[in-house]
Length: 92
Image 1: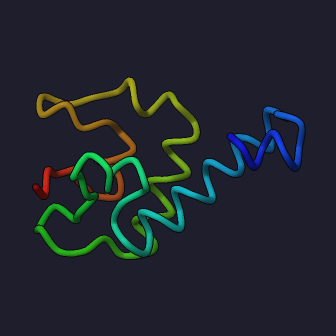
Image 2 (image 1 turned 120 degrees about the horizontal axis):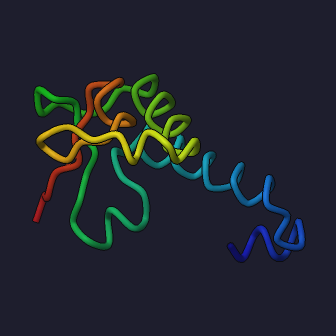
């Protein structure tokens, strides 16, 4: 949000793009964002292995659409987690 304010005066599209880039970099390469790390969470593949960059990209793009978050299964996994076959787990 600070970057959006400083660089783009809180432009809606710029804020969304900054969020998306942060998600792609964070989840795609480390398995978590700053918020996930703070609360001891990590995005992993369904088999427990590290998320591949393509999975992180797909998950991030779907998350930015917002609608997939509201389409959940019995395990409360949104469409943004089901399509790339990822899961958010507690690592603490």
